[in-house]
Structures are given as structure tokens and as C-alpha cells.
Amino acid sequence: GLFCPDTLISLKALPELSGITADNHGNIVIGAGVTLSNLAKNPIVSEKIPVLKKSLLSVASKHIRNMATIGGNICLDTRCWYYNQSKLWRDAREVCHKTGGSVCHAIKGSDRCHAINSSDTAPVLAALNASVRVVKKGGERFIFVKDFYNNNGFQHTVLDPEEIITSIAVPIGEEPTNAVFIKSSSRKGLDFSIGSVAAVCRVGAPNRATRSIPGNARSKISPRTCSVKPSAAWSGCAS
Image (cartoon, rainbow, N blue to C red):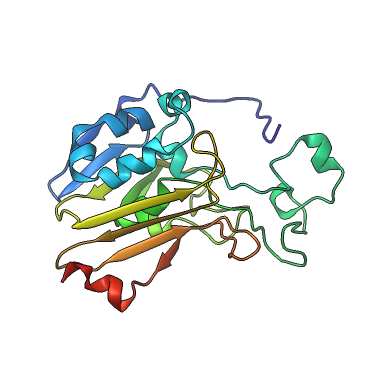
């Protein structure tokens, strides 16, 4: 296995992590412990941010979505063809950056890990300008999803070891005139994406697009979501 912890602590019973509410700032606030299935069925999400619903329903299978949480999908560990293998297979190679070594098998000579971000909801949340509330003992901070990821597959989020995500705030005050989420994968279900893209176009507001491209021979590999500046033709869709 990839992880063999001595102890696992479940947070799913905490009511503070399981709510879906609207705040006074035009946001829908989603508890990090809300399952992907329950979030996809929420009427506010279905009506106001259907692009998020589409990304939620693209994750794995219904059985997994019934257990998986939105906080977990945002923090989903990065993946690598060389790392996500059996221990016997990994032991046959030199220890890589992600397992505490100093080499990258995917990109020879690299000084960092290039394991990829496979979260299906991250590009959509970044395009929607969503933010996460991060809490630790004695403090909290709010981070935009677009700033939540590092460009390093070994430590791909900005979370400190003692921090957890407690909620996600998604702006719904301005309804998008157009929004899209596209996921490319080898199979329709139960598969991680080859590449995904999300874009939101609002009337009278900055247009935003993000992409999460695991990469192949022709595309860049990235542990984080990448913002894409809209072209002149695309930015005119709201005019």
C-alpha cells in the first residue's frame, strides 16, 4: 500500500463539517465533510452552480461518491505512474521525491516531484473563485482555491501538518452566463482524468478559466490547477 498509518481518526460525525448554508456575502458555504453525492443533490448547487454538480458527478462511481467528501476531493493526493504502484514494484526503483528520495522518474533530473493533481472539483472551484476555510488550534485562514496548491507533487497543498479544511465558500451572488467543465478520461466512470478544464463567464465580472492537465507526451505535467488567461474572443462572450 501507499500509506500504512497506525491510527486513523474519522471526522465524518462532526456536525460542523456537514452543513450547506448561504451566508450574508453571496456565498454558498459547504462543510468539508459533505459527501459528493449529497452536494450534487443539493438544490442550491443544482440551480445556481450546475457546473460544480457536473464535476461532482464525474468523480469515480456512485458508491465512492456516497463516501467521499468535498474536502477530501480538494485535498486528493497527487498521482504518478511510478508512485501509484505496488510496494514490490516501487522497491525495484530508486526512491523518488514523493517517497523521500531525490529523483523524479517521470522527468529525469528534476529537483522536485511532478506527481499530478487529479481532483475533478478543483478546476471548477478555482474558476468559480471559491475559497476554503483552513483551521488549526488557535487560528484560521481563508485561501482561494486557485492559491491552495503548490507546484510540487510531494507537498501539493499549502496546508500545514496541523491544519484541516473545514468549509468551502462558493460565490453565487452573480450567476454565470456560461460555465463549462470538461473531463477527458480513458473510461467514462471509475477513472482519473487525462485532462480537465473549467471556465466561467460572467456578465460585468472578470472571466476566469482553469485547467488541470495531468499530461502526456505533448502537455505539461502539473501538481496544481493552472489559470488560463481568456483570449480576446472568449472574453467577449459576456459583452
